[in-house]
Structures are given as C-alpha cells and as structure tokens.
Length: 247
Image (cartoon, rainbow, N blue to C red; front, side):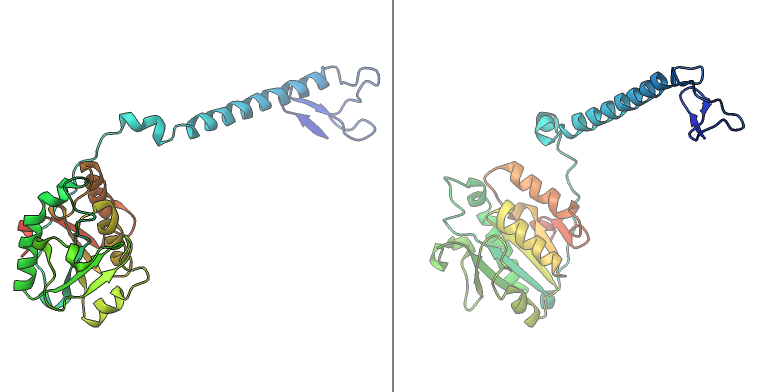
C-alpha cells in the first residue's frame, strides 16, 4: 500500500482491494482522483525546487574575489609587540639586501630603510646575536649594500624565497641553539614572508619588524604583515614589532 503525499489518497500496489484501499479503475488508472497527474505535478514541483537551489548555489559560487575586488577594505592593522631578545638563542636573518633586489629603480622603499637596517645590525652585533645573511639568484656578497654589509665569518645562505629549501639553514640554527629568528629583508612578499613562515612551521619563534621589510608597493608589505599573524599556525609563532621596540 502506498500513500500519495500530494493528494493524501491511499492507493493499492498489489492486486485486489485491501483495508482502506480502492481498486484502481482499469480504464482510467485512478481511484477516483487524477493519480497520474498528481504524481507528475509533485515530481515537477520537486524538480523546480532542486533547480532553484542549484541556481542559487551557482550564483553564490560565482561571487569570487574578483567580483568583490573593488569593494574590499583593508582590515585593521595588526598589533605590534615590544620584544626582549635573548642573544644566546636568537638569530638575525638578513634576507637579500643586495642591489639586485634593493635599488632606487624597482624598490625605493628598500633603499629608504637602509639606515634602519644599519641600526638593527649594530644592535644585533652589540648584543652578540647570531647574524646570518642570505642572497638569491646571482647576487654576491659584494652586491650587499654597505649599510647592510657582512662582517667577519658571518654565514651566507643562497636560495630562493624560502631560505630553508635545499639549504642547511635549519641545521645551522639548531647547531647554534637558536630558538627565535628575526627576519628583515628586501622583499616582504618574498624572502621575508616565506622564510618567516617556514621558520614558524619548523618550530622557531619569529620576530618581524615591520619597518625592516620592504617591497615594490605598500600593499605587499601590508598583506605580508597581515598574513604572518593571521594565517593558520603562524599567529601562534610570529610577532610583529618595529625597530625601536626591540630590546
């Protein structure tokens, strides 16, 4: 026995009438109601409901970031923290501050921060932090700006944006007992972002002075700062600060 939910009629699905059933009329195929039409009407209504639902989902999925690009507003600036460093367990990573990636033509914001880089290096060396340099591409130590120049036997790592990839940087840090890295560099959206994130994923605490990372545009620096403290597993490891707040 089957109840037609559209009409509330009870129809028989076996030969012969049963309790509460009527034998369908052989000629018309219904029990006194237009059974076939009711079923078709119900199916049609369900089809329309499903179609409308799918159309709504399709319209929602079409609203990607490009559709909303012009209306996006920048979030509030992330909080900066005052940082006290432990010289025995902290390393300063000087990332790609060479003329190829830091010059007045393509990245004038990097050139403008060179006096702050010089001040940060003086502080690090005064406190006897481990200082590690990196370069990318065909850059050589002689390409590093004088304000950021290497001293003595400070290590040099050559790699792409993530300075942990295909290098011994992680081993070098562990061998020196380093637990915290300070990342400064010429490409906020490049070496700073990827090396800082990679360090955090490897269990290091990370400090990024926002006035010691540069980029082609302010937006790239802004995005990098936001990403480093909002992306999954980074916020718990990364602190943003500024040069004058490092002690």
